Image (cartoon, rainbow, N blue to C red):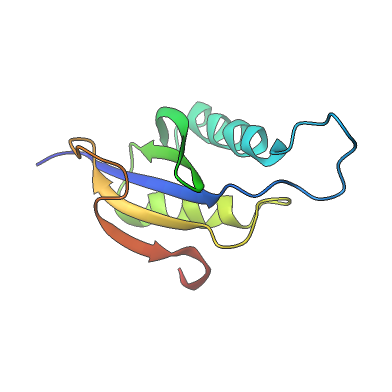
Length: 109
């Protein structure tokens, strides 16, 4: 059986209150740093680099059971500055395309 992978889909929405010339999506770096910290503590594995896809930015985590991965995804959705509407997709590392799997609304997890 393939290893469980959770995709964290975050709407690609620019942050408000930025100055001209500021990076529009600072939350991408914040989420990346948060996930790397969890990886260093052994809680999850960052499976791959994040990826812009359609109207979302996707982060990929693995290395734990589904419940633990969804709990991390829920924590990501609640980070300061993360746009509302984030959701997870539970899939596996052998999936051919993004978004192929069971969708989980993170607000309800």
